[in-house]
Image (cartoon, rainbow, N blue to C red; front, side, top):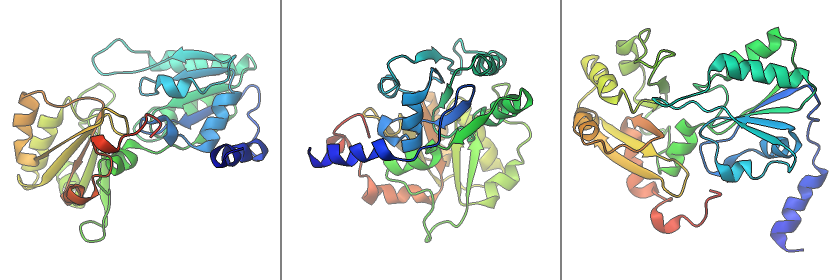
Length: 275
């Protein structure tokens, strides 16, 4: 047995928690590359009777499921026909109460700007047991693949994570933009592409400098990953030219300067799709 096979064979004796019939596991699939799912998440893939997944889960990762598992798409993508949240929640409860081991597989981390919290509250109210398996969120893992540390002691001791739209699909109305703009040197924005120009206008009006560095990592961790760098004041030109691929994560602040040295995932270094 070669070294790699021997190492993975050790998982056969790993003491994973039992995935019981009638349970729902909410598992974070990570930011894109299949290899970035956790060991516990990978274990759940092999144990589940039904896998209900969102739009950012790759076919390659789903191919690691058990051979008898049913796979159900329940993705949500802005501007496209999407599953209704109430229907997804109902499906989770119904399948669990039918005695199945239900895997809710979500891109990134279940509790980071997803509906994981809402789904767990509904499961709890319905008396369905559940387990949370955290995942690598794009706001950290995606930046790392772009050669951008989310924190660096020379630039920032705080970071803000911000969603680019609310439940109605518009720029969040309840955000204190002055507080957001001034509270931390680094702001990481999820699902912000559609409203990026408007968000940047609000940040500028709240006091951020037009010259602040801004980077957009698209298709993070995947072979087609791309990174666009600009400044806060020049975002309008970028958006007008429609040069932003999605899905993407946006980082505003000085940490993107480190990409000049830390760009380890350039085209010549992408060897496979596992990560």
